[in-house]
Amino acid sequence: MSKYEPMTRKALITGITGQDGSYLADFLLEQGYEVVGMIRRSSTLNFERIAHIQDKLTLVPGDLLDEVSMINILKEHRPHEVYNLAAQSFVQTSWGQPVLTGETTALGVTRVLDAIRTVDPEIRLYQASSSEMFGKVQEVPQKESTPFYPRSPYGVAKVYGHWITINYRESYGLHASSGILFNHESPRRGLEFVTRKISYAVAKIKLGLQDKLALGNLDAQRDWGYAQDYVMAMWLMLQQDQPQDFVIATGETHSVREFCETAFSYLDLDYKDYVIMDERFMRPAEVDLLVGDPSNAEKTLGWKRKVGFQELVSMMVQADYDTLSSQIK
Ligand code: NAP
Ligand code: G4F
Image (cartoon, rainbow, N blue to C red; front, side, top):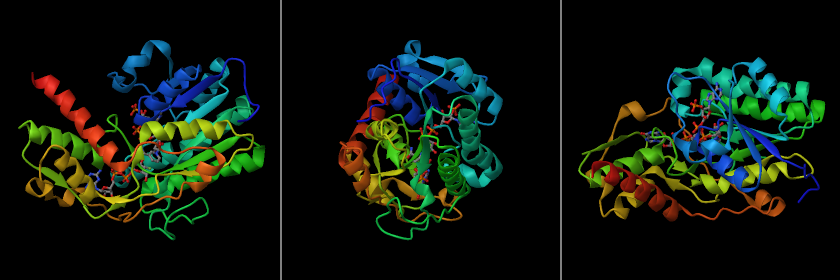
């Protein structure tokens, strides 16, 4: 552990209303941090994931598209650590909204970095890089040195965010690190991502609320971990003396078909009776196989995932089943 121990530690999280932002906020509060969350203006509140801790957070308006808002937040709240988790994070949407994805997921990182450089270059930054940068993989398993070959506007934007973080680190000496996180899921995962789409559908089918589940490519393989395990790695990176980039993964890969099999069988159903193929969910370019090598993070950070594939799937199906059951009572 580093000697870096400010008296009252304060962290700013962008993307606090998202899956990872909410788990990271839980974790940092438990560590005794004062947590500031940047939220973008919307006509309706979407605080479902942080409702249980809302009174412990300082929520401030801002947007990755607007550097002025970030400069003002940094000036007013003076965090020691910034976790940049905000992004247009859904790969499929990135083909329909490539410019917005670039503005947010790519240039948004420059705005965060530059706001830090301008206001206080001592602030430590975590940047949410992604295994989607490996795309058409050049090596199996993927590690920190594996070349990138992104296959979506989202993946391309993340490569930009990754390299601009390295560039600001090397140009200005910022303590800025990227976590190359492989897919991580939870009961708080957005309903459009395939794991939650499946777990939610399985629960609905079991309860007689849905007949079929329409999916795209069942053969894609992903290295799926549990989001709560992964946010700890983000924090560990910022506690190191030297900034560095790390792959965070389980080291195992499973197909979408296998996820279906496991999720349906958890509630004694056979996925073959319910899953149908739908062209609308196929992608213009697919990432066929992702599997990460987390050995550097395990050795250097002392990080290790706790939850495995079977436990993750069961947890997600059970959570959706419990929620839906209580709603129909
Ligand atoms: P998520 O649930 O989709 O959350 C994204 C967050 O970004 C939301 O809070 C969203 O706010 C916010 N946001 C979007 N556009 C913004 C803007 N212009 N200004 C400010 N905030 C904005 O994503 P996640 O799964 O938690 O992922 C967190 C980060 O890790 C993302 O950068 C993602 O790309 C990256 N990542 C995720 C995974 C994964 O498997 N989950 C893997 C690798 C990397 P609203 O609530 O207002 O929409
Ligand atoms: O769940 P997904 O949408 O996640 P994807 O594309 O792997 O991206 C996620 O992980 C990235 C890390 O590698 C993050 F950076 C990113 O922000 C996001 O969190 O799709 C997973 C796989 C894909 O191969 C997709 O083609 O599932 C396949 N799939 C098959 N049917 C489907 C569906 N995906 C979705 N969303 N919906 C389907 O019906």
